[in-house]
Image (cartoon, rainbow, N blue to C red; front, side, top):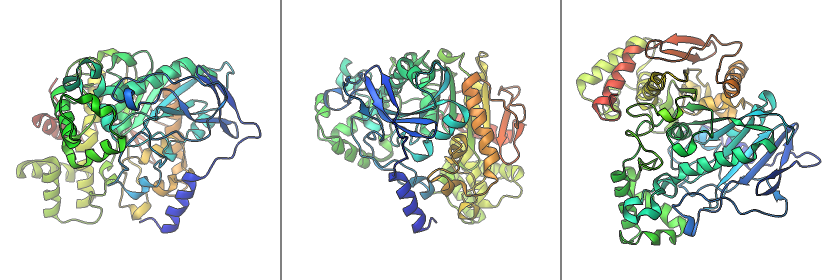
Length: 533
């Protein structure tokens, strides 16, 4: 557990301000000038509007451009978070890094880190989509600080806030008619609007609008893989990196309409009075989501306008719209230790089997088959670690492999797959390699305000962070992640399932744990989670 002093220190780090240069940097956007701060050679601009307020008459509708301003606008503080319920159920090592700024529907804001302003340089642009599924989070998580990527690797780093949960993904097209035809995907259209802003303005910040990488972790990975299937986003990005998150299937219009009807009922609004939703205080809508439980899930909707084919972005095939866009995607060894419901202490054989049956929704025979496969692959692992790895494969790793395979089948641009396996020593090693752990390595933020709370403090972390941050930024620059210090990283395909394992010793493996991968994938198809191509 984190010591109270550690939590207090982390809280101070979250609220403290960064030292500024003697003369704060000023940049010109299409809507007005902004004044940021500086950290050595890095210029930082926070809370820059890329869209108008989404409140009132703009609620549930596609984003509109921001209103221009005359005076120089201060851009030293994060913008408001999108309305959401504060995250619960996560490991405390993650919670201390979360943004706790105020919430507002005037939330379409972005943050920029760069070493150059209007200098004619064409630096790669990396636009980060935050985690938190499609329901929570923000671009202001302190582990997303782009200072090191900008300073060490000469890229322009952008993080964004956008609409979430019901405000970004409530499908009202059937209940409310044409006016709300896009409502199930306006959170994704916000991301498109941010990409349009980048295209129009990023040269002022030293970036190349013709070389934009969209990347994200967890929900952010799902967002960037969704963008690959959206006609409105095409041509706005040129590479994609999805960390511990992909979206195969989207929500159907019928399911989305059912969720909308449930929310209207919670708010005592008649099905034919959808416009009344635009006048309800956002806090009341957020409060109405809780009683819905799992039936109130939110995410992109297959509305025929923004998502138009198959069952979703990567089901049953990869989107042809982005066939020419290179992709990196991967997962961590024990993703599920991020969740407080995951056992961390020893469990007996009976508990192992009961947990597998409950989590994967399988019978006794399938449970025994899976236990045998994972004990063969991990002969030294105890029961609790076996469960953590198996549940993580079920959650993410199997879907990463399927997504990569479907991308590779298009035969146009490569998909590079990785598996992050360097464990954290915190909590005596019980967390293993949890969801979000690799973020600090990718951003090279091992000495950030809260990063060592999750990564530990050992010197052994630095070489891996150097390799991963160089690979990610090299990919952003060229579409190829190969850098010195790593084995040759080959693209993934059905015939050559090459996976880069990131650990103290990085290694390229071919179809690691193939039998387990096939077993989990077959289970997903049998349960209808994904379709057979």
